[in-house]
Image (cartoon, rainbow, N blue to C red; front, side, top):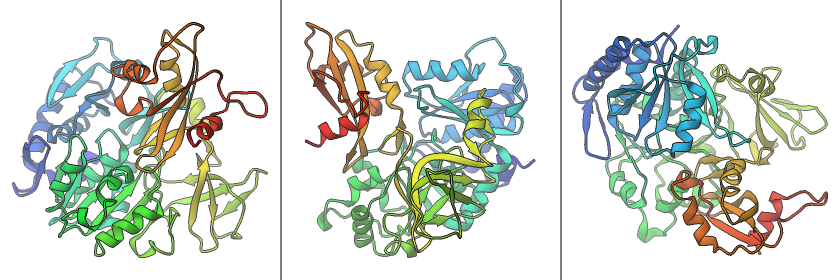
Length: 474
């Protein structure tokens, strides 16, 4: 089996010119990262870590975070990236599932519990457990294998062509698969990696001058590229922008190409479960493929399953009705942690059910027309409405709550919540938002709260998320 560690260890032993720099100004050479990783691996072995045991890695986009990942892999463990600023409830929910004994924070090992986790055959050969929001509000642990993820890096290199002279600017968090593969691909190419711990438009602008490659979600790009020519960023060396996680949109795409005509934009679509980057709209297709996700990347197959149970297959008749996009990938997950039932239900004949509604255009490109699942995609972050509803239902003044995503020019989607107050209760919407702070991650706090006499309902009388969108757009 080819592990991510083995695939990259020779690069890590490179010269001092190969460096990773984080927002704090800490600079680590690849060789220094390898040394820190070796120490972490030895600490884990000394502490009694078993093969394929999950280990939490506290991530704040530091150079040491990459060393921690390599240290866990070198010791034979499975890395579980968890943001250093994650809410306590999120940490508890993840730990309840992983039952990890150990955590690595900024290169230091700590003990979470003395009780070893149970043996799990699913984790044999696993590199990562990445937690994503579930439709029930409970995070799902997506288990990614070493050999599959290492092979995906080869495919991505064939697509993006990172070189040793590149400087890759990464404002994406390393807890997400997008940020992780960009960082690892940078190391694989022997390039310079510049990590941003916390995104801000000003910080991104200030660091663009030296970058040759930028990886960012559209909501980040909107803050930099939609202010007109007078606000155009100074990016003389920028040859590639990699984006994904949410719809790029025709306006933003056109504005970016106008401001930076010599910069190629790779618009990617994919899921953590499928190994990421299943489709790509390449720079040369930007005009012809506007508002599509382009074509499948290397070794990816897809179906579009229409409501009557039929399939629009790759190469089949064009113009078929919209249906659920199904993806088959040799780079996909090993399964969901401790949830074989959900794993089985997520596939049809070896194809992963994305939950997205799509159609194949006459030119063979695929466009996303909606979502079957009710997940909210806010600034590239996937948020389960049920999670927000569960929190707001504990507010002492709230009797009923319903949450939905509403189209937003900057974020892609904003989080809106409709609430009905208990009899005799009085509270302002802003006070409810303030109450949420600290109880859940900031990006999950509703952008807008509508205080109503009754929740909106659909034709059947059931509470309707679509009704929230209608209210928001009045």
